[in-house]
Amino acid sequence: MTILKLFISFLKIGAFSFGGGYAMLPLIQKEIIEVHNWLTLNEFIDILAVVEMTPGPVAINSATFLGYKVGGILGSVVATIGVVLPSIVVILIIAHFLSKFKNSPYVEWAFKGIRPVVLGLIISASLTVSKNAIIDIKTFILGAVLFYLTSFKKMHPIITIIIAGIVGVIIY
Image 1 (tube, rainbow, N blue to C red):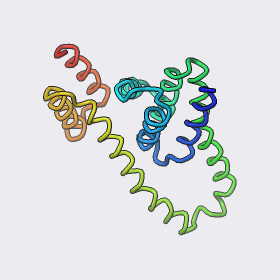
Image 2: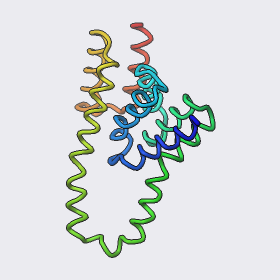
Image 3: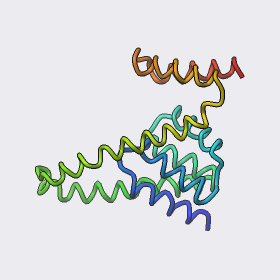
Image 4: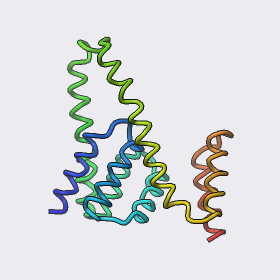
């Protein structure tokens, strides 16, 4: 029964998330932690750290790792299929009708309306994760410095992750 619930949860997440993996994080958090109590917030944050370091889309990696944590290999497969299935269906439908509606102002307006929602979801996920990731002044300073280096000095994110891991090992 957990496998079916896992599939339905990630199917909902895939169907009602716009803007990619980061925009999905609040929905994933709600389903996995609050609705089903499959993980704690700290476990969720740890999995997000692994998801960030793993190549591939955040949404698919999240579904795969979280599905594995909840239901093993079958859970991993089911959650991944659940999260990508709505996108596949929508893409097939859009591809079928694209030639008729590609220049429609209504389609353009709809996407302009969705953009702020995506930004809000990403900010919400960032605030939720930061509340639990910043545990003391050291982690706050580390996060701020690495944010500055990544955002303003254009340091490559992989280097940032490696630095954060090394500093974490040294400090803790």
